[in-house]
Image 1 (cartoon, rainbow, N blue to C red):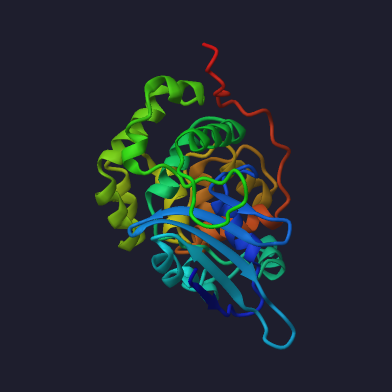
Image 2 (cartoon, rainbow, N blue to C red):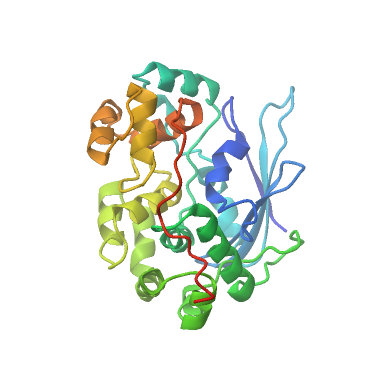
Length: 306
């Protein structure tokens, strides 16, 4: 049961940093416990791992994050614990250019961009989230992990699972994708990605433009999915999500008060944040005045009865 620590610069917000890695409150692979600790179950290059992360900050020692790991991938996970917690995030490179962004930046200075170093772990759930409601995607993720995920090593909370390996994803029969509400095109994109998983995992060591291009070589993986994946894999501050139904509207309204924003308008508004556009967008969503969201026009994916 090896462990490791990292002393983050103050201020630091563990929950805000890691929350983006959780696919809904019922995510079997990533969970926050009532005591504030976080549990993550992953497939690493060295094997499965369970990682428990706790914040042991106090007035004397200051901030101290502790990670305890179980399983064959424990050493791999602990070696990369600081990066996962945002140690590589160059927060000082960010300069607010709008009042709403500056206010959110001051309020949420403890936010760091987490870097998992794992591509497929973020790619599969990102594909599941294409063109459907978030709730439907989270349902599919939970169902598939409970059905095909591995039991994690260590004393994990009940119900947690390690996401299936690429070999296991490729063995999921068509009717199980259907029962989980995953249509044929999304299932096919995941299976194609699994066939090229070693090449896709190389993107974890690439710069953002090259990593975006590598992921989009797979049919069914476009700019939206690639950005959502690399925001987590690389902790990429400029991996702005394009093609989203709500984000351009929210960004446009927060910065201008106008409704009906487009990707092109969002890119113009965020041009002053070149190199940091994803961070700026996250801060706007955290602190900006957002329009009332209308009913989601993407299809609800509970298709098992069809």
